[in-house]
Length: 116
Image (cartoon, rainbow, N blue to C red; front, side, top):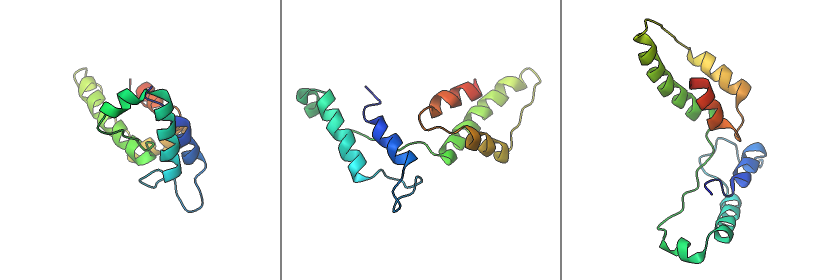
């Protein structure tokens, strides 16, 4: 149930209006309204009434994903260093990989595959 309304977010990312860019910090009000409509149809009102807040996450962008990769590479480097193996990727390489493979629908599956 954590991906309720994800199709609205993906649609906005794939087809931003001319007044909005994919990198904008917030989703459009229409997208938020569509997501909340779906949330209300999925969950019973009694459950929704006990929640303090519902958080709608914006899609991860390339800069954010680059930060995640850097953190995971740091951990990988520490593990490999114990085996006398060194690995290093430049920022340019990481951005190139992300640009070639970025798909908002599969982003976290990709990151796990890339760093594991």
